[in-house]
Length: 382
Image (cartoon, rainbow, N blue to C red; front, top):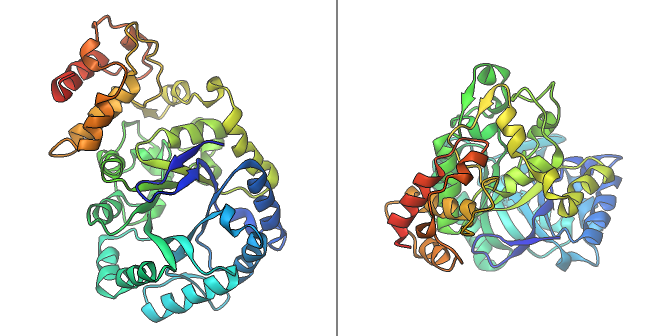
């Protein structure tokens, strides 16, 4: 299992992580089976958005004797009322729900406390004004949560939260189809068929800015909806008009700036094992570029996808990494020192480019790589 830094939290998380969607299968007995497989394969991170008391109790039982092996991402503002899940901004309900969560999980703290499901700018303002953010800070000060996070599907809201420096972790929906969609306070628009009926081209700039800002500010992204609820794995259901594989979806998400792990919402041991198998899959099975380039209803023309099809470079420049640093540098008003330093210590720099064009002939997306190398040389001075 490969491990990644979760932003600047100091936590090292398995890049394959667990969502909780399938843990309620078989009257929650699936929960223990999934945790056993996770433990065996080095998965150390999981998300618990659901307030279902039976699930929380099952997870508490699964964690018994191995709490310190797992990093818990669990949610504030997700409560159980009248036998069903509900999102709340009522501070008294939030506090009661958190206390119940600790009790049912049989833990004294959680590692990442997610402020749950904020997809509207007005909702973010309410989280600040009605004391929920202050409560999260109180929990952190008392040691009951170690880090504050936010879950969102809306890049505008997520960016505002990140730029406020109020959060350290962002749970966000990342996949090649959602990345084409502009911000909306109606999450249903992400998978509405009519939004993909026309030919869509290139990543939504707000989403791109969000990922790059998280990278620059040290906010780790934990990915939800990597498979689009399973739709991307089916040619019939996929809004792209063609299917991707599990490995391709995971590889795409993990290649986005600031992404630390993919939360795989497996409904069975076999599904989670399929995600774990990503770790040993050959590069040919992870390669998403040919599939994206062939999507009948989507084009990524001119946009670097960090897929490294441009390699090998005759002067050994890591073109995808240089391009990622270039994009990070261009995203802000000034170049963050961390970006400049990471670029500086690369073994080879854009200034060494001999402008041969062999990379561009191999690029599936028609990226102007030679111009990017000139710009990187100009910006970084190397």
